[in-house]
Length: 428
Image (cartoon, rainbow, N blue to C red; front, side):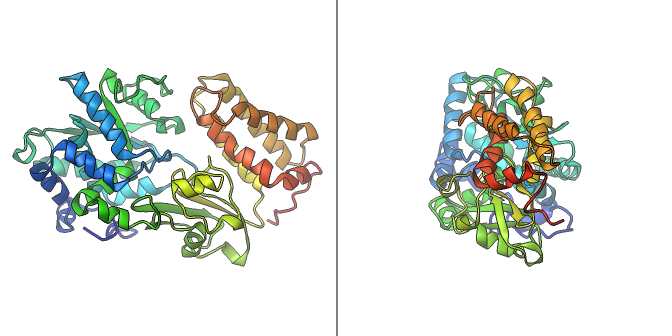
């Protein structure tokens, strides 16, 4: 396999890898080797030692999650056990999973097979949002190819391990990215978060042990198994192992997806994307998508991993770096985010259902020059109501209010200037 574990040799505009091409690149060698040489428990240990963290936003240690699933599956006894793959990518600024599914479907499928073997799953269900139709086509074809090659079904490669795999296309809602809402969506129920405990490993899909992993997370697994935990750790520039797919968008010259060592500073990533567009200067950036706090020029050298970005006052999230230049109005940018999160609320709880539309209206009024001084106070009130851990059923409201809180702290003077009907930043 290629030295870079995720993007491989995929080229923009190319057809997705077919089975024969993926095999020529070393595809499915990790699966064959694991079924011959490693017990499921040993496979979990390899992933634990690699330090792989979930790439869907939370950054939870993948090996720890798998270990909990193994224990729960053993306690549950006979019956179906599930691995659900989260392909419902809707975080503003994030587009990494779409490209992985479209270009390298067999990489994801092999990673899911290895994960299923490790945790004792009997079926893999890949949930893909309906808008990702090219990804759904590529994955459907790849699953069929893997079945024809004898890599899915009963007694795979004579190992005694059997596995079913299928695709589930979802109507697509932001909240489906939350693992218990994703489980509800697959069950055909209204996709709203569920109380925990019990956790999905204890009682997930149809009440059976379930693990949910992100597309990028599973795409790294074949390379970890093939090359070893130490190799994966060595790819990183910090203590957090591996590489990361960073999506650089906004006011940069060449918006793009970049695979770089975990811990690569944001300043370097922005330069790889051609720097700030039209020779302008940086105002701020969100390091992990629309629900993360703003950082500015002083933080350009912060290593982009989970620990360092958290210490800097934000979060790595999905690694979707959204760049604002010195002519980008932060009030307008935050307002766009607020409208998105207000629309995507599942409506289950009052603070999110009613509070987020209110916030969006306040920001729209400020941006239009119709704001009142008390509107700033109301925004602060909503930030306080959201709280550090949120007072809503899930984390959607707390995440949605994060850029509002950060914007008020970093750009208070720009918010105040909007009360006079004037944006001191926007030039176009």
